[in-house]
Image (cartoon, rainbow, N blue to C red; front, side, top):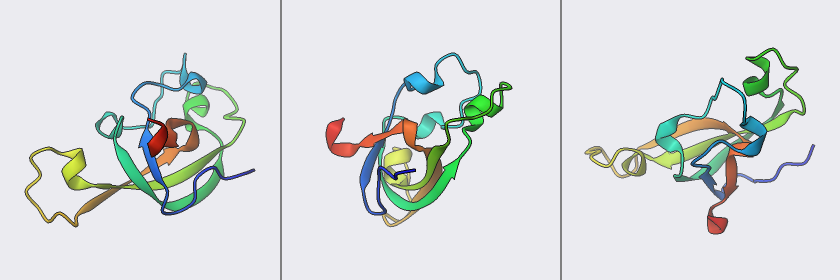
Length: 102
C-alpha cells in the first residue's frame, strides 16, 4: 500500500465526511480539527477502517493512519499556553488532503 503523505508534509483535515465515510455512523475524526492544517508527524501504517468495523463491515480496504500535529493555538482560539505547544491526533488518510489544495 502506498503512503500519500510523508512526515513533515502539511495536510488539511476535511471539514465534511469524505465519500468513503458517507452512510456510516461511527466517525473517528474529532470535530475540533476538521478544516485545520497540521503537519504529518508519523506514518502509522495501514489498518482496517474503524468507521466500517463499527457498523459490522470488514473495514476494507485498509486505510493509512497518520499522526498529525497541530499547534494548539490553531485548535483553540483562546489558548494561552506556549506557542510551541502542540496536539497530536491520529487520522486516516481519507480525511486528509494536501494543505495547498484546500
